[in-house]
Amino acid sequence: MSNHMLHIMGASRWDDIGAIIGDRLALQGLRDALDEALATGSGGTFVFHSDGEPYSLVVAMEPDMQQLQTAYAAEKAPQRSARETTPMRAAHFFQDGYRKAIDCRNHLRQK
Image 1 (tube, rainbow, N blue to C red):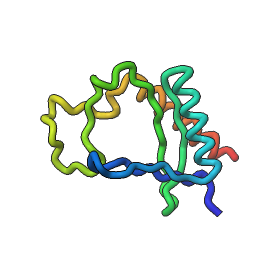
Image 2: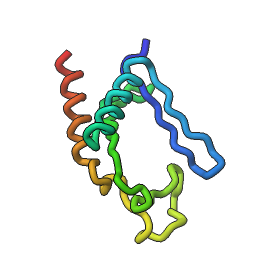
Image 3: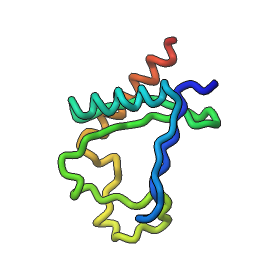
């Protein structure tokens, strides 16, 4: 049985499909991270891929998404110029969300 397993698939093109698929614990962790981000600007959780690889998941609320221009998920060479593409880590609340994800990881390890 899976435990804290979550897959997030971003769309690679405008006509592609994105998806979030996870077990109950992972989806509850995502919900909690979303609720916290809506309340404070950032949230985080710690989940696993199906192969057992763990990862920190940051949820950050960005005041103006027009200013945060990112590349598509599978883009090898971004279509936009480098000056128009902003790394996700530059989001206002990214670092706070990352800290919360690490706190979640540490809590899981203590169980």
